[in-house]
Image 1 (cartoon, rainbow, N blue to C red):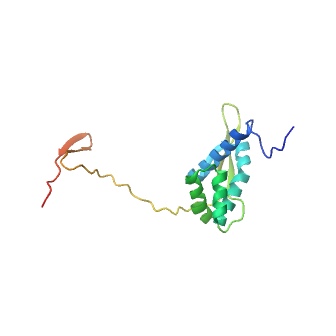
Image 2 (image 1 turned 90 degrees about the vertical axis):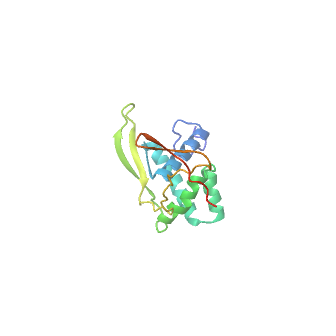
Amino acid sequence: MRKKVFGAKLSRERASREALFVSLVGNLVTHGSIKTTKPKAKAIIGLVDKLVTLAKKNTLASKRQVLKRLKGNKAVSTLLWTDIANTFENRHSGFTRIIPLLQRKGDLAQMVKMEWTEEIKSSKKEEKKDTSKKSVKGKKEKTVKKGKEKKTKEAKKTK
């Protein structure tokens, strides 16, 4: 008996199926595309569409709904309502596409690549990381350059 199970069961219990969906959606949001089986990709299309539509509303209630459906994953949900919602502001549905790949070698499962239909515009500015080392006063600083070790003394404090 089906017992009110909507969508694909994917040979999993409810909790592990929900965790799988959250994981797949999280990877799709953070990486832009995922490689998975066709039934799994088709199972999360509806969830992704609902989450993007909720994120586009940009209200407090919709943000809480997105957080609830992603099991409190704040990093993924902030990406959803900033970058992805801004990218798809003129689109009403069809946020993802499925591209067929070769079958998996071990069990011949049909593999697909799931990705966004438009390129996601990032709102973050690319920041350069500062690679210089800061030393503690009075201590020696070691710097390694091309396999050679150089010891330098920190400049004395001027009055």
